[in-house]
Image 1 (tube, rainbow, N blue to C red):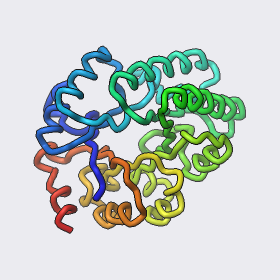
Image 2: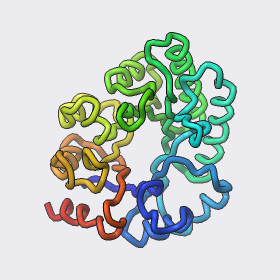
Image 3: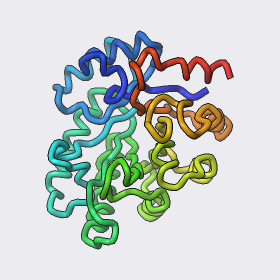
Length: 258
């Protein structure tokens, strides 16, 4: 049975961010993930995580000025220095939380821009080297253009090609079922084909990004397939609760009874 990690950026928004850790633990989660911890001192994040005996499954590197529309720095040639600073910041938080993997967002850039493509490759390689020294995996995630227009990494095949090209043993694919369905469809075939390079899985219903089991896919069948394929990592619940987090958690009970 997959192990679920509550995404504290999207779930438990009934609580302040630091209080979401306790809420997730009380709801039965053994792990958490979120987009960014950087609005809080690293000691605060580590304390609430440890007090609630939660495993930190994942978080992202700093992504630049989110309010201004930046969605990562890795493919931005004029932000190379800022990207390298962001790596150092993320590694400090990783050391305090014991997280085993970091997701790096590519940023808004054209894939046919040679400078952006070269910068992205260099940035990912640099991060793999630095993270590898700390014993951490690096994750890259294709994100669909409907939710994030202009995002550089918007294709699973391109992600797989980069992983093969770089050959870094700690570079893995973050397979988000929601994004996969919107970009390519063919979710189960994608999981079977890409499982050797998958380092983390996330789930949300398509098309509204609500609780699994409320959209066009048979999400429970997909989760069962993860077991059959030998996936042993966490499944991040990166969805927007339709009517409150606790009210929507019945999908996990239905899955466990299946």
